[in-house]
View 1 (cartoon, helix red, strand yellow):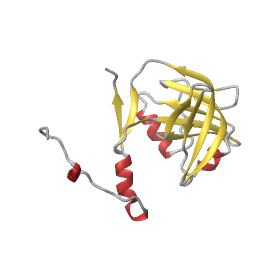
View 2: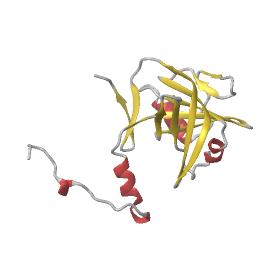
View 3: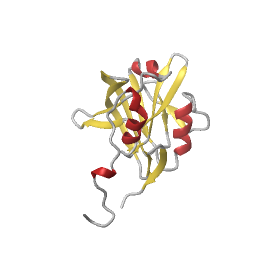
View 4: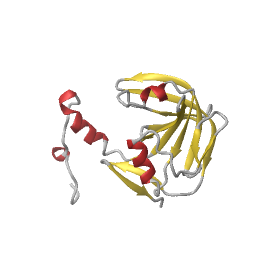
Length: 173
């Protein structure tokens, strides 16, 4: 075994279940993800939520997915949304991500505009996908929302990442 190498005995094993949720979350937290903020419209105005459960699905047709938690007070707004926007946060956007993790209406002070579908979108992010909901799938304590991308935008910049409960920065090599 190479110097410093770990073996299976060094791994913490968990059988996922109600009594081991924290251990399972800790295991999931070892997977570093990008950080996004998803926005949608409601009858009372725009709403946003910080999300790391985002992935590309298809190039043809262009589709992406994300997963709101059913326990979230914001869940029903997003589950009912016909349109939404996903904003990929840059390394300088940790405050925005933290604000939307705590509050659904943390739009004050942000450069935004309203897109043709009535969704508030951020002007400052490293990528944005404006979407129409095409499918939803029940997935335990989350909902899988699949959106067809109607407009995509991006710019250069280092991504904000999330791992083991902390925000960080990814710099390409």
